[in-house]
Image 1 (tube, rainbow, N blue to C red):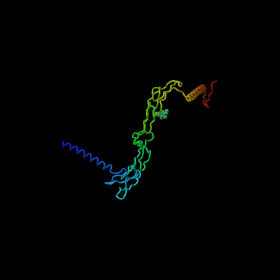
Image 2 (image 1 turned 90 degrees about the horizontal axis):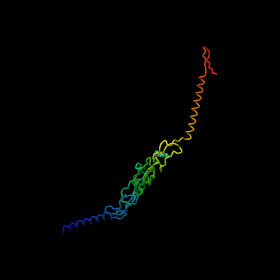
Image 3 (image 1 turned 120 degrees about the vertical axis):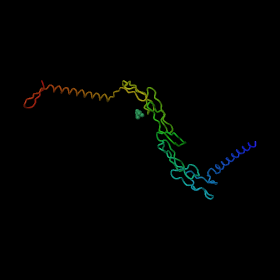
Image 4 (image 1 turned 180 degrees about the horizontal axis):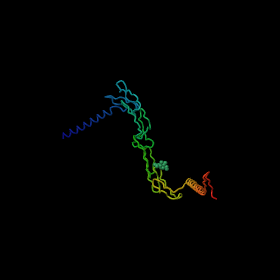
Length: 240
Ligand SMILES: *[C@@H]1O[C@H](CO)[C@@H](O)[C@H](O)[C@H]1NC(C)=O
């Protein structure tokens, strides 16, 4: 019985000691003050840091944070925090530049979405996914969401960059199917363009005309009769 009482007292006294210490450590100074040895000193305003702690007859001496550093709360710090750098390699760019009293705010680069959001800020971002051939862009990516892709159903196609699946050409007006459509490509129809028709006709005409002309000359040459006298020029005459 006595032994049990002793245990209870030990536990109680430990609890009281811890609670007292807690009060001493964390509640000894007012909110706008920081602990300096046994004393409390007034904190420095955001954008500043402590240069000299307060003394019995002088208040805290504060100095502004140097470039590229900040403090965003009243503080008793000897050093300001370094400003965050938005790293391009992590898909980030500056949304709001750092000031003496606020850290840099980063946002995803164009075409990227945030994978590690933190309130208004973004810690890391990734490039929007591409949709594969056979898929369409169901929802374009935003600064906070990735691209959403949808699958094309039979009879339609998308190369991955369309926002809807397009129906295959039916080849009804253009004649026969040269290649049937897939989910990623349109059907190809046996189609003659007016330009092709014109070019084809002209080429055919030229070939035919040349053939006729060459044949005519050839026959004419075959029909001539030549004499080769020992002296003088060769004399050729067309047959009558
Ligand atoms: C898909 O087709 C469009 C035009 O129809 C083209 O501009 C684009 O580059 C193509 N995309 C891919 C991924 O092939």
